[in-house]
Amino acid sequence: DGGITQSPKYLFRKEGQNVTLSCEQNLNHDAMYWYRQDPGQGLRLIYYSQIVNDFQKGDIAEGYSVSREKKESFPLTVTSAQKNPTAFYLCATGHPRDTEAFFGQGTRLTVV
Amino acid sequence: DAKTTQPPSMDCAEGRAANLPCNHSTISGNEYVYWYRQIHSQGPQYIIHGLKNNETNEMASLIITEDRKSSTLILPHATLRDTAVYYCIVRDRGAGNNRKLIWGLGTSLAVNP
Image (tube, rainbow over all chains, first blue to last red; front, side, top):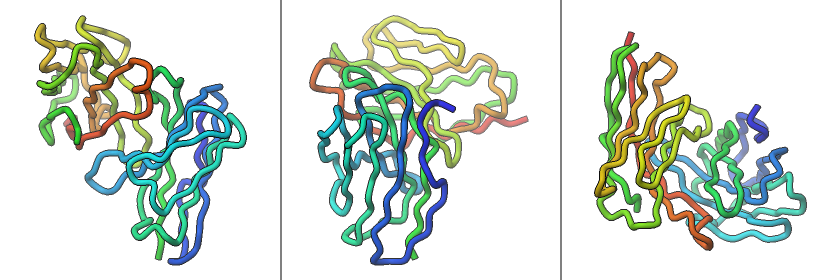
């Protein structure tokens, strides 16, 4: 539904491990985005990509990495360098000249 | 920092209109007002956007003041499923300004039976 699939919905990892969150879309949108949301806070931009093989850092990119090898896919890796990785992660898509109007259902990552 | 100010919470009776205010006193001429909502533990959902004229769609109406310094989102007949956090965001839709929305804390709307 909505054409954006984030998986899994819940993810648990041990501290010090890298983990990759999946985001796939079939909306044919050029732009894709990753946000992080912490309890009681608004969304903060981690990385975004406006076209295949290109991506830019957002406001809180430290400790994260992304790739954009296909238009449909924009995976986010949370590395061990991220000091507070436990959060709700949201992927969004849109047209480059339009707003990122479409969101996935999110992945809740818990690092123990 | 977010460029909008919203009350942190509001209540509304089921079946009544919910009027959610937003102040954006520093809005510039080419910035649009967008509204999203987020139901608990889900991704945000786009509701409506506008520049200067009032807008209406199947979900809501958006009333923007003549000076554009504030707006109101109206849910005409609120249901329990409208309980969510509502975000008001201003954004420039011009070229080169497409990369992000700046999210504030929104208004937590509780629709009561």
